[in-house]
Each structure stands twice: as structure tokens, then as C-alpha cells.
Image 1: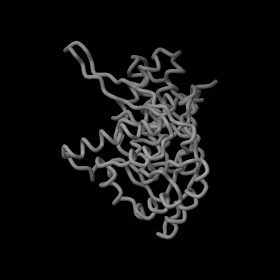
Image 2 (image 1 turned 135 degrees about the vertical axis):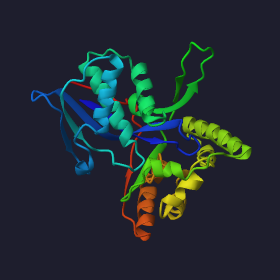
Image 3 (image 1 turned 90 degrees about the horizontal axis):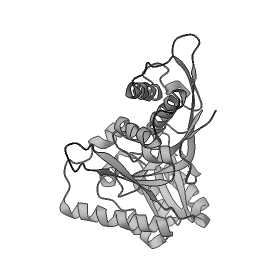
Image 4 (image 1 turned 30 degrees about the vertical axis):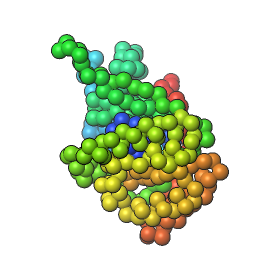
Length: 305
């Protein structure tokens, strides 16, 4: 059994490099099949929307693992228990990739290290902000390491970002989807120097705010000019929900991943009010949303049995 947390990525100015694991989970169980063919069983909300054949993302990651180690792919029974909403910006695809890779590693006797699994997961996902915290837990900043010689390969350096215990994540999950591909299409190909400087400064401020719990730094640090100004137009009611969250006492609100889930960071005493305010604001826009106060998952993916 592999238990993998969902994630929130970007967190404002940390586009494609910053992510945090949250206390929502998908579970994957891979066992050798006696029938000699792949069997996929899915339970939980939206189970009927998950592919139950060889195109399943967790199975594709499982296959990629065995290709990596140069062994034949065994026939398996794959059981998936869903707890992370699909296509909502909470890292459901990252859980599938991490779950499939770790299951393969476990069945094969652990030939790859955690770092090697991580590199493979990033390659499959295309960027590190979701798969890294899903695998390692906590809040993580990822940076590429440029090769210094022709013999070296590019790699990743991962930094653990302290998350102050007084910072509570509130998520608001609407009843509509937004694909990552669609959310990327609206982004410009180039940005101004001013926008690059803005995001660099605000990412630094955000990291200090997360580490210290300083609300003023968080309030400023969650601003972004790289993706949110363009993506919020794809999320009906965004401005109304943001205003409601801030009025209820949130330090700030951002798009979780590619959206449409919205993430507010709040003090514990403000969390109940912010949770209600965000749901109410979307309801007033004619949109049903599920809101929840969650916690930071510090363990990451866990393999058992």
C-alpha cells in the first residue's frame, strides 16, 4: 500500500517550483496478479472517471519504473482509493505518478533510492512543484542544477521550507474542473523585467512569512504576476471569493496549482470564518464549493505492507 498526499503548488509567486503536501490522500495498492493480466479497481468519489486499463496514470508510472530498471513489467492487480479530487489543482496526477513509482520500487525490492525515484517522478510530471512534496512531504522549493561540464547531467536541488505552526491552509474546491493544459495555454510566452523582479522579491517575502508566521509578510508575499493574473479569468467567482476570504481575516488567497481550487492562508482563530466565507461567496455566484481546513503533511508518501 502506498499512501500519497495531495498537494498545493505555486502558492502565489512560486510558479512551478514551490509546493506543499496537504492532509488529503490517495492510496494505491499493487499486488501480483494470478490471472496474468492487469486488473484495476477504483473506489471513492469520482471513481467512475478514473481509467481502469493500461492508460491509467499510476500504471503508466509503474511501467516507466520497470523500464528504468530494465526488467519486465509484472502483471498486477491495482487498487486505488481516491481522496484527492480530480483536475482541481490538488496534485491528483502527482499522487498517481508517485504511487505508481513507489509501488514498483517496493515490488522490485527497492533498487532505486528516494532521490532516484524523485528524479523519475519529476521527469514524468514535467515540473517538480507537485511531485516533490507528494513524495517527501512538507513544503518544498525545487531548483534545477545546471551541469557544469558536458559529462554532467542536469539535476534538482530540493530545499525544505519551514512552515510555521500558526499558518492554517483553507482550501475551497468548486464543483467544476480546470485542466492543467488549459491553464497553461493562457500564460504569456514572455514576461517583463519588472514582473520578474516583482516575483523574485515576493517569493522571498513569502518564504520568510511561511517560516515565521508573520502575517504582514504573508499578505505581501502571496502576490504574483506570472500566472494568477491570467488564470483567474478561468475561475468564475474568483474575485468574489478572494474578497470574502480577505474580509474574513485571511492573510491572502491564491490559486492552488493550476486551479480551480483556491487556497487561503489564515491564523487558526480565523479559519472557521474564512472557510464559511469562501463557500458562501461561491454559492452567491451560483457555484457549489466544498471548503475545508487542512494541515501540512510532513511525512509525504508512505509505503506499508
